[in-house]
Image (cartoon, rainbow, N blue to C red; front, side, top):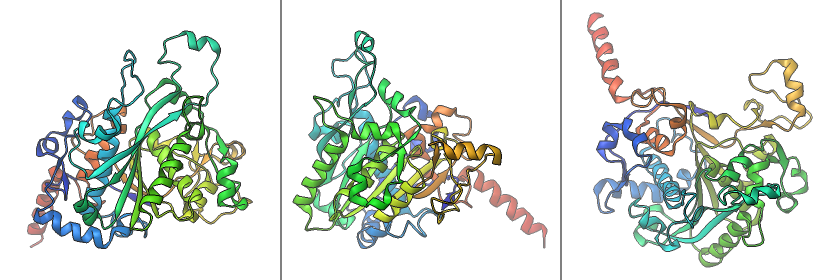
Length: 429
């Protein structure tokens, strides 16, 4: 199911808000790709009001009912939570050392305990507990190692795990929340992995856990490689995630708990794989939710079915003008949710004579989860921006911050619409 949406600037958010200067002049987003976030005090009336609502209905806000009735119009509490998780992804970007000339290139610039504070995203109530790294599985020719070290960097810091430790925040959330945040593509080899667009079967250890009847689940080769590959000096991202989740369950398994996995771009794809892996590996896993921003397609129809069967809840924030959300491969018609493997796939947008060739190739994908669709073109502040800016995390956070409903234009145009309607109404008398 898709929710078509446009955005509108609103004056306030609950619990977390964007400064008014950012809202008034969002054209400056590209001058500084990060938002500056100002957390509201816990004792504010607005926060207290919504705290009770979130604590009482936290499972609905985590997607237990697929966010029914919360997306159009966008519920203010859900908006606040989406932006909060976007801040965790922003911290992953700000913590990463992008400088190829730096001796610490592709690592975290900050110590584990100071990721959130030094990223300047404000007070969160969460404590980082583990660094996460991803390793490229592509076999490169030997001569590559004679080039600059940044070209052949195989393992890189990709994100972190953080556990909510603040008592007030736990009370506001209604449970202890565990966040896994992933950044997007940053290194040369990660870009190469992104280009491996053909589908491949999930590893036996995951398939066997879920069940032998699920062998048809396939995911993008490059994403799976980054999630499961290891090296002599670095365990796989999959191993690190499983190890940390096991520790969390052992420590906090007897209290209300949730796992929220969030990421942007490549990080959104890895978040989907991690969520599936957690639900497939841990029979006692609590509710697992993915909040993704600008994510590419990840797997095929069978993979989508297995995600749904496992109880994994996914909310995809999509900018309809972002090309990354339209790749890789081709997508099947989402209306064919009940088709079996013996039925022909209806590949959207292709002539019939082409479909057969596409269906025979491992390039037919399926969108997963619930979608909140936004649009840069509908925003008067962003409509003239380029293709690259449509994919930036800051653009996504701006659109989420401003969106009200699919029928509500931006505040800048809403006044003109209301004035025109008023004139028409007066003319009818």
